[in-house]
Length: 292
Ligand SMILES: *[C@@H]1O[C@H](CO)[C@@H](O)[C@H](O)[C@H]1NC(C)=O
Ligand SMILES: *[C@@H]1O[C@H](CO)[C@@H](O)[C@H](O)[C@H]1NC(C)=O
Ligand SMILES: *[C@@H]1O[C@H](CO)[C@@H](O)[C@H](O)[C@H]1NC(C)=O
Ligand SMILES: *[C@@H]1O[C@H](CO)[C@@H](O)[C@H](O)[C@H]1NC(C)=O
Ligand SMILES: *[C@@H]1O[C@H](CO)[C@@H](O)[C@H](O)[C@H]1NC(C)=O
Image 1: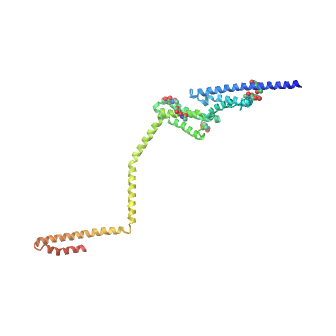
Image 2 (image 1 turned 90 degrees about the horizontal axis):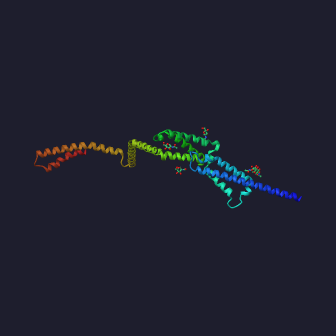
Image 3 (image 1 turned 180 degrees about the vertical axis):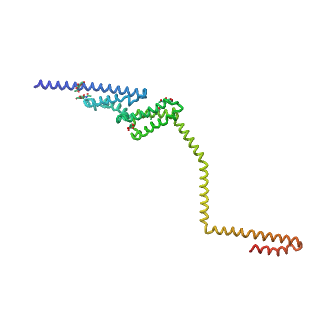
């Protein structure tokens, strides 16, 4: 009986030893996978022959994750919450954090459709860029560039900015190539400025004409409003009456005066002696037609 207990204890110890041996083995396995992951991501910090971090390090990431999950399944007692650093967990969170920060999984969602469709657009732009003279690229490849850019802009909206880093990086470098290196945006801006200027210059006479017309109409309306305000005092019929009266009175007055003056001169010429007295008396008939 005592022998049996002893045997059980020995067996238990052996099993434990085997388990911890397996856990150590698994831990080393995880460390290897982490190493390969770091080598891959670090060497793809910038694209290597058009190979990028998400597309290139997918298998390294997946293997590392599987190894970690297995270790946590069988040996979590040994490595989880064992000390302040919790190295296994902390390291894994750091490395997975890098992968998640790059939104790499976005590249592989729904069978990698996003990535494939974007790549088709990028390749067509590249083909155009390659087969066109540098000076014609802005015009010749514009539609290719816009297709790609629009796809990205829509994607940015639908994914709320969580776009796979490979796509982000390609789009950024293509935008830099387009606007900084090829200076296609500057030409566009120049062209727009030019067209706007031409439009403004062409429309200027029209604008001036209508502007003046509007100002004049406004002013006339304002003046008309003023007259209307003073209507009881300065009535239009009274003005016209005054004018008519003036027109009617002026010729009669002048003809009368002219006749009076001629008569006066004639009398003065004929009778040089009686000058002052006669003139006073002779003025009366001249005034009379004026009062009519
Ligand atoms: C330990 O590892 C070996 C192979 O490496 C495996 O066959 C065995 O089932 C493992 N034992 C335990 C308890 O996980
Ligand atoms: C975990 O242990 C089970 C059996 O206990 C074994 O089948 C499995 O392979 C182990 N996983 C890893 C990753 O070692
Ligand atoms: C990718 O293109 C295919 C075929 O043109 C289309 O059916 C699919 O909806 C597109 N997917 C995305 C995410 O744009
Ligand atoms: C696109 O074309 C320009 C001018 O020919 C060249 O300098 C540039 O390297 C090309 N870019 C790519 C990504 O092919
Ligand atoms: C885009 O690329 C430029 C230069 O290549 C870099 O300075 C900039 O930080 C990048 N922007 C993003 C959002 O990646």
